[in-house]
Length: 116
Image 1 (cartoon, rainbow, N blue to C red):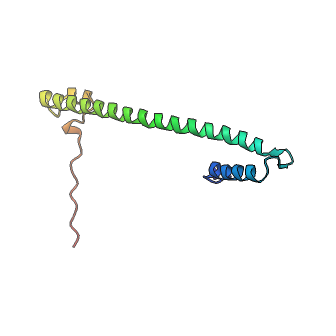
Image 2: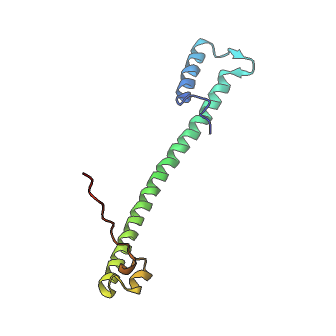
Image 3: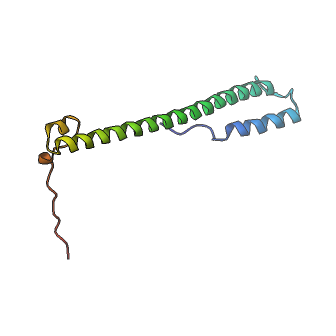
């Protein structure tokens, strides 16, 4: 996706232009472009930006809630696996059924030759 065709501070620049345009001559027009049209577009853009900011804040809150819930779920999963491992052993089919890797199916560690 190509970059934006406008600067990041376009709203701030438009507000500066609008304020200056109003001070210079509010009735000045460039074809169909006039100060009131710029102000209307600027108001709409500001409202949309405020809505985006609000939604981003909500999204951050929802992501934090999701992360907290997932951390709790992961804690339960680890505790259940550890319990199954303690009760049935680390090479049992029950341990494998809940997602653990049986001891007999694990790869043995590879020893590395120390380089001189």
